Image (cartoon, rainbow, N blue to C red; front, side, top):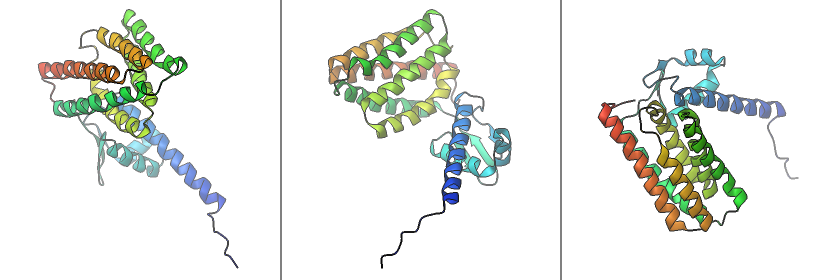
Length: 236
């Protein structure tokens, strides 16, 4: 007689799902504390201290910290908790090299997909929001709209693995970008370059889309790196 396939009890399945949800929640909350610079580079805390701050048990916190270590945001120190990693000028140079290459590929892929106006509407809205925020001198809202543009561009590229890799490096650069946001010239070029990219994607011009975005990332990266060097900010 064929044997019946054994399955885990419903209670175990529910417990496993709950544990995964708690880990995901802890990861999201800790990641946001780091990206918003509420936990500055060099900040240290024990596993128990982190768990107490979140009002959670240590198990999901431990697993979330291991994920953050894989993301390159923290260093987990056995028996000593965690430390938020700083970002150096050389780190930012390498990050922008990766972003320039991979995001330009996403722009090229998006241009090859014959996207509809409905699909492009998110990019248009993000660009308009950037322009409006600049007119109000609201750089934080500008940065939020800019981040939304880049995330939607990656989604429209249609390559989920590429999107996942690029978003990780965008996160790692985010802290430095936000710290220096008000130290840089008003970012008027980004809005214009985004609008030109959207038009190239609309036209299905793959080479033009790639070149526009490559130039955009190279310019933005150079501006940021030049500022860090000028201010002597070797680590952030």
